[in-house]
Length: 310
Image (cartoon, rainbow, N blue to C red; front, top):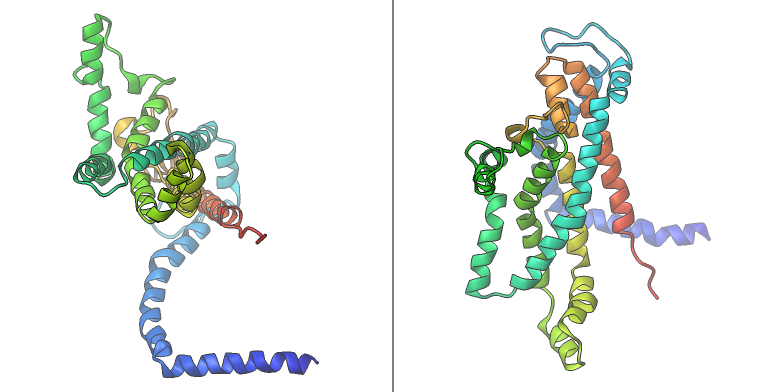
């Protein structure tokens, strides 16, 4: 019985291999895969492996690492209050991205997704912040928040109050950073939604209108369900992007005041690279990498889980 079941499967596999050899696919794989595999190994696999090795050393980056300290770097990391603050700030960015940034992007996409010259102009305007380099965006907003000569200074002067330095306030500095992050990246998510909305068949929308559905009902019951894959991908980018936030924070606060605005990446940079604690920084990198992998795997399993067919 088992031989009878395995026969067709073996034949199918043989046929597939034979077809792959004859249609040029095998040759294409053998030609294109090795260069990509070599580059990926050189610039991803090898650095990851080295980082994992250096994480067990007290090493300043010069010479060969010889002072093995075992898990001490990880013990210092998990016992450091600033790292706890950095993890909390990273979680805040994730929440703000999912709760504020994505709904804002979706709302604007629903308003301007149709192909008209006016909508195209608005799409360009809203997408411009994403085009700007993160460092440039951070510098622009640092001038805006500056209490001496920025927009903040103009507001306080108009109100007749003392200059207020928002980025120097421990309670509000990270709120300002999250505002910049929302401004910087909402256009990216908006473009994902626009591309998805333009793929929704007009027939379905027209049918819903004929049935008497109101605009909000059409959005809720037709458009959003149809663009759900795009929303899930957008959320995935938002979460992974939150784990990588660095360039915006450095020109704004450099992690201050009093290390209150660090994310995990700026924490790695400040306490690892700038202080020549490469082993400690490698430990932070390992934790960050494993966190990103775990989040990506669980998100893929949960968000893209196939729904049972009724």
